[in-house]
Image (tube, rainbow, N blue to C red; front, side):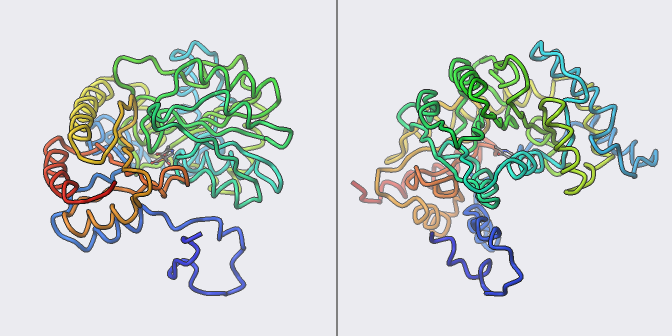
Length: 400
Ligand SMILES: Cc1ncc(COP(=O)(O)O)c(C=O)c1O
């Protein structure tokens, strides 16, 4: 693996480091963003968080909590008011009764994923992970000795997942399947039939579905969102993860959660206490305000991102060598370059030669080293400017 030669991360042979640390790759994102930080006039199509300001009523709630002295620890599972609000919110959204005991509040979805994957991964256990996928999953599984079995997403089908391929990959060593819809880096939303087929077969075989739903509100074209929570008959074999980061522009406030059976939550609560103790208290109060407040912010954000997505689709269609599709969620498009073209080199050259920062496909797995992740979490003016630079540059290339 080329990432293992990265000098600054693996520089010493100091025996102090647990070999598991070597399962963590050097993220392609960091390399690109660090390089861009030393350059002027860079357009970032690399952003993984909303670029809209957090709604004022949420900021006010955080600030009120701070002034009211809400600066101590909460209960280990989370602030009771937030657990209640989340249970009510999901119960209503998916007509699935949930109790606070089904929920654990974490430091972002990242901690929830960390807990779910590292509490279940063990040597020899197989985890099915789509490829391409968000870069956290495979390393967290491998750190604890688990084996990642990749199931490819099909670029020619807009990166959809074939449920039959997932089912065919399940065997006696399979412990869990990781799903992420809408997906990072593809923006693909799996249809209900796909989610149901996987969840049903997994439950039948006693395999867990770990579902990362952080983009569950960034859904376009009026689509209704098929959450795993709305596709399972009970919570016995599911862990559903989400957060406030993307939905309310609260990424830096670091509040996420995990929903599962009460038995699973009990186990994870203990692990959570030994990992981060509790999530940030004042921002849990901000989360209560987010859930109890108006949904105007989300509606406006979806309308705005939908416009940006449409513009990006047009630009990708016009750009030589890029093959696009119509993503229905999140804020990414993952267009392919011709097969055999190394997108890591392309991304580096585009950054250095025309000041456009994208993220190469090899950051998200092995399947698409010829793709670029383009984030449209930026203004339409910036998207226009980026493609006005990229199109003449792409025209000059002579790839087959
Ligand atoms: C698919 C996916 N899951 C999880 C996260 C992390 O979310 P959080 O900020 O809640 O930790 C991200 C952030 O980019 C993401 O894209």
